[in-house]
Image (cartoon, rainbow, N blue to C red; front, side, top):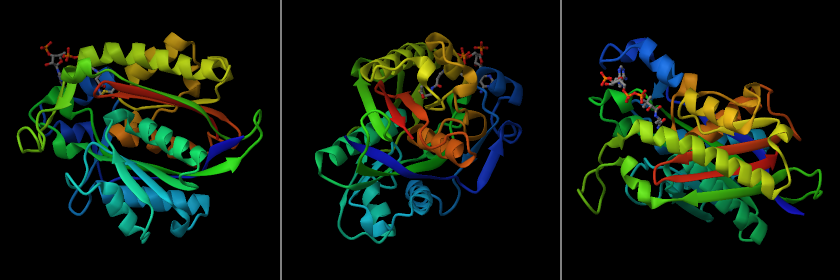
Length: 322
Ligand code: ACO
């Protein structure tokens, strides 16, 4: 069977780490409140010279290194982001130029926190369909640039960063082979109002700030994530107990716990980085994946489920043999 195999992962974080205590010096909040409600202890905040594409480039280079793939072999770049460097061109083309690739397919995907799952699914379909052979799929964000620092209920939740994978179409054994086995995506635009940015090029002509109804988002997240994970596992005849690792979108430790409980997943099988990175939107899944690959938790042949949910709402999951 022709499958998209992850040859390498990479990630990048801004230089500056800000813990809750430091944040509490400028925002009316406390370490205790943030840890109890979200599990977040620190986040990274992009500084001068750091943008979505500089972080994306860093993550891409790390992934290419691990994969031992030369940039010239990349014929597809998909960058998931809600915080591009510019309204246009697509930040994927800035990353492409930074890698010295003069001709390949390159575009951005906007699905906010689910962006990486969307980008991965598109890349997987293009690779298996023959439109490309070796892809860079990146999630990169600088959400701290679109936060309202006066809104303590949202500004404490987010951080900046990037993660990337190198994918290649390879013939593998249908039963035991590596690669993406299945993925499922959803969107329901009736919920636009619960989580959005209050500006844009075609409405206000401004960039806008993040707005969120936290409790409503929380309730929908647990239901949608449990549903889509069940769906993707059922599609390939697997059960929650077959899964070696779940790499979830890192929004909130309570969402991760509640979703794991709903599915009967062993919490020790869930990769958690939200404590150190906070919510990095489209970057969070590949950032957590790279963390667990590099610290030796995720090994070749492990069955891994990726999942995310975000503004739109959009949500999705993928199951792969690493
Ligand atoms: N520090 C201290 N107090 C705060 C803070 C803060 N940072 N933020 C809010 N409060 C106060 C509120 O003012 C309120 O005080 P009041 O009772 O005196 O009015 C009190 O805390 C409770 O506020 P709620 O908003 O009801 O708090 P809640 O328990 O719902 O927690 C939270 C808020 C953490 C945002 C929660 O709703 C949540 O986790 N939602 C999920 C949202 C999410 O993770 N979104 C990410 C994007 S979508 C995704 O990725 C899935």
